[in-house]
Image (cartoon, rainbow, N blue to C red; front, side, top):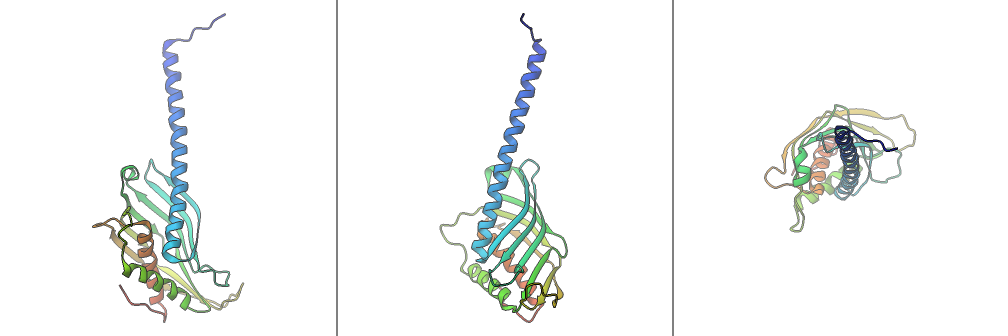
Length: 221
């Protein structure tokens, strides 16, 4: 016994199958881009800072142009249980078409107040070393073989917190001081930046703000 399927039903089923394929394919593409984004960001931040960088809780949606990172941490591997810097609850938006055609156009990167935490543990020279390292790279400028990739309209990090205390695991003998918010605009507006150069600009600006709230200072660019 054969069963005849109505023509409209066939068309409907074909359409449903197409949607399933597109949605599934879109999910796989988005997931691939998200993972590549996280790996690329980690590599760029490590190259810029010469620190160990860890990303946790990251998400990205190439269809809506939004993303977030739960935490970015920088650790200089000095014998302490505290990261040198932590940037928490990062939110960002980008132009969807720029993912395909480039350069990547990031509209805004934001971090809420108290979302940036620096640690001067034992010696503020650790943070100063980080900032001076990045400053040297910025002064050297982009190399001829570097490929420009990113434009950022605005970066807005709320007021940060610097923790000062002894380099003792589990120590509670620390105090906190606030440091000013960090705002950068039109990054790469004239000439798009590489991922590494963008990371350097961000790390230097945040690190300098943090150090300026202490006795440790570095020259401005």
